[in-house]
Length: 265
Image (cartoon, rainbow, N blue to C red):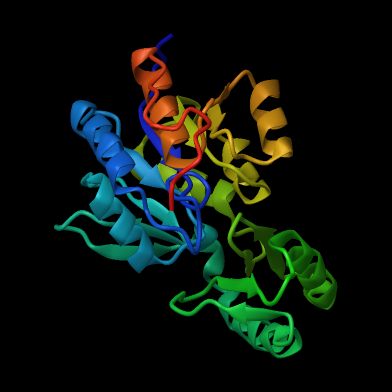
């Protein structure tokens, strides 16, 4: 089955990569790049909580450079134009007027959370927290929600497979997707969204076609199935390659040597 797709919107952690602490599977990235080379008229835009420099590295690996088509970074805080002729960030419109208060709250949360989490450096606005010790990301997310309760009217809190992310209220992957759609002149209904955790749900709810790799959480897989989307048989980047071919070529690409989709790290 083929679809009228004009843009692929793609998460990084749990989709293009396994996540922190795992090697990138370079062989499978060559398969993504082969798809990119074969489909120059269907851009890929990253939609990630990661910072601009990290997104830039992944764009280099995939060769996903398109003039006038930005990626979403820092969970929607910025659109990142990565083409060599237009290398710049555009802030989410909701940051205007909210940034000063958010940065003050951010400082307070960092003080309160220091025993349970570590702050990811390198982000201009979004506060990303990694759990310490044996705490899971989901447990940290629940802990952060309690700590941040007094500031609930000013914050957007979500999590990926890798970290807990805190942004100004209204700034998320979904609202940023509409900002991106305005910039590129492509309706969200003509987009495929690929995600794996609850942090991707705001984006998945806005696009016309939804998909996830086999390692996506149960709630995301259920949502994708409910929407009539595509749940890949393979995980992580192998699942992404499978999804890309499903939506553009009507094919089922088996890219991993291991049939269960697990990587050798």
